[in-house]
Picture: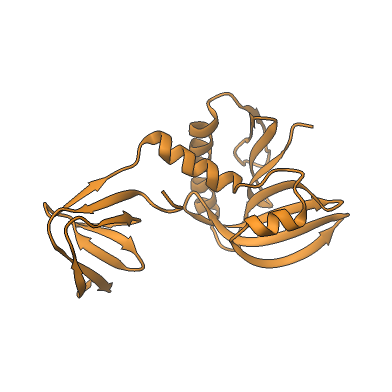
Length: 210
């Protein structure tokens, strides 16, 4: 599976591939029986292959969803991105494929900012380096800039459920104050994964236990 994929399509009998223009289906080509494709989205009566391309969801195709374990593995890979704390700037740069936005220095920390998504939500990815080594990284959902407070609350609740699914129901909880939901801290393999929501926005950060 790849990021964003929700299932797999197998063509049982030749079927038409369409491009949606608004609600209008424009014929592109015929997919031959035996072909296997990734599915990224649904519409009523249709399955989406990405890029605005769809097939009819009928007896000519077989749609399969991945196992829960496979889904969780993909989510883990999306969260941790293949990087490890302590990596050099060049190691992280080789691994990260998201769109680079800016680099800045804050109180001795070199911060790299990328544009990406986490569990389906657009977010800014921030890597923090100290003395040329990765000290932390995290995802920032800015309050008032891209999302409304109601949207951030909904995203917080979804992220909470995703993290509980990945790391279990054992977590630390602390009051955020000002009417915001509590900050949550999960532990895994020497890492601290924190979910926080306050006046500065919503964030998920990954740091070391040390």
